Length: 159
Image (cartoon, rainbow, N blue to C red):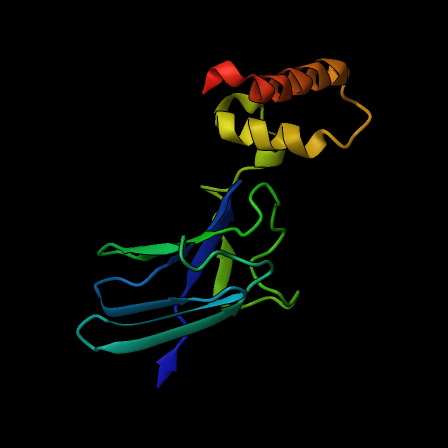
């Protein structure tokens, strides 16, 4: 019979991490799909079989998602299709999974974070996202800069 492996999860800016707490796992298989993923493995001397299938809260990028096995667990990194969008929960359904819990040691409210740990790319994409807002005091600067760029392209002596 298959058992659901116990797992903890936490949310990050561009990925969601799910750590399946299975010791001495073998035959680990993880299958990532756009809106769900599957995990299965055998464990220990008893050769207990585990299988979890998760319908996800949001979409992920299956090609960029990966997993890493250690002797104590299998950590899956689900790459969000929309980085910077927080996931209030892992599963599509609000119903609580009895095998799943939040990993409070690794959990952090990155949305409220100071920007120190943002990579410049995140800052850049956030800037682009907020361009639509009225709260950008330096919009004129940005526009001037853009027009300067397009002028450059017209200059023949660049070729």
